[in-house]
Image 1 (cartoon, rainbow, N blue to C red):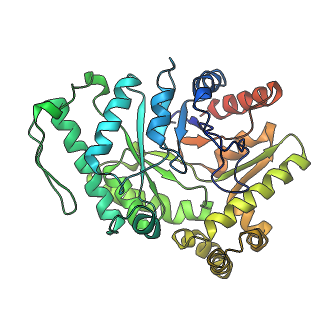
Image 2 (spheres, one colour):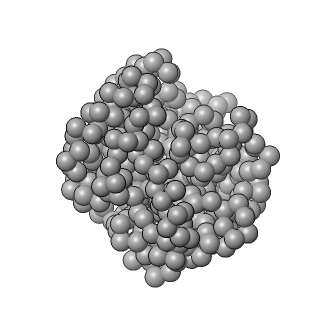
Image 3 (cartoon, rainbow, N blue to C red):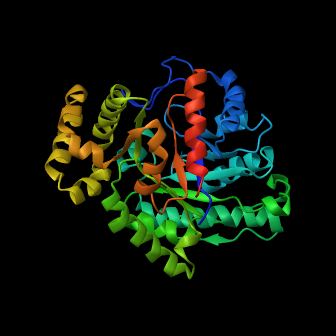
Length: 360
C-alpha cells in the first residue's frame, strides 16, 4: 500500500470565510511566522505544507517558506490557472522547484465562471479541455528549458512557439526536472482530465463517500485508461472535513463550524453533484438562493445533521485517524488542519499524524 502523506495549510492570518477554520483573524498576513510554521509542522511529522489562493498569492507564501531548511513538500493547493498564462506559472514553479531543491508540487484549479470573468476579467472557456491544454503547455515549456528543445505547443487554447536564450532559465538537476502537477477536480470531465494528464487530483472537502465511489474514482480510471496508464499512479488528496475533539463538547463545536463551511460551499452550483447524489437537491437550491440574497447567516440551518455528517469524518482524537482511513480509502494524501497552538494541541496533532502514517 502506498504511504499516506499528511498535509496542512500554512496560516496566513485569515480564514477562507466566516466560520471556516480556526485561524487567527489578523487583518494583515504575518509572513514573518512562516519559517517558524515550517519548523513546527516538520516537527509534528507532516509531509506537506499547502497554500491556497484565497486572499493571498500562494506562490509568494511558498517562496518565503522555501527559505527555511526542511524536507517538507511545498504545494499550492490550489493556484488558479486561467487568470495566469501557462508560461507565467512555468516560471514561478521552476523558481520554487529550485528554491526548495525539488520539493515543489504544483496544484492548479480552474475556479468558476463568475470569478474568472468578473473578478479576473478573463474570458471563460470550457474548463476541462482548457486545463488539459494548459498542463500540456506547461510541460512543453519545462521540457524546452530542461532539454534545450524548441518550444512547440499547438493546442486549442494555448499556442507557444517562442523561447529565446535570454528568457530561458537554467535547467533543474535531472532528479528535479519533473514537477508534479495536481489539479482540483469536481465534475466528471475534470476528473477524467486529471486521470489522463495530471500526476494527482485534489478532491474538494465538499464530497461524500458516495460521490467518491460513484463519480470520482470511476472517472479518474476513465482518464487514466485514455493515457494508457494505471489510475493507481495518481496521488489523490481526500475529500472530507475533519471534525474532532477531546470530548463531545469539542466535537460538537467543530461540527458546527463544518456545517457553516458546507453551507458556504454548497451554495455554489459547481458543487451540486454531491448534493444530488445524496438526495439533497432542494437543500442545495435553497443554499444557492440564500447566497444570492446575501442571507449568509441563514444558510447553516439548511444543512441538516445528515447532510453535514456525509461530508465529514467525525471522531475523538484517539479514533479520528482510523476513521479517516476508512472514509478516505483510496486517497493517498490527507489534510489535517486541527488546532496546534498549545503544547497539548501539538502533542495531540503529532499523535494523529503518526496514527495516519502507521499501517498505511
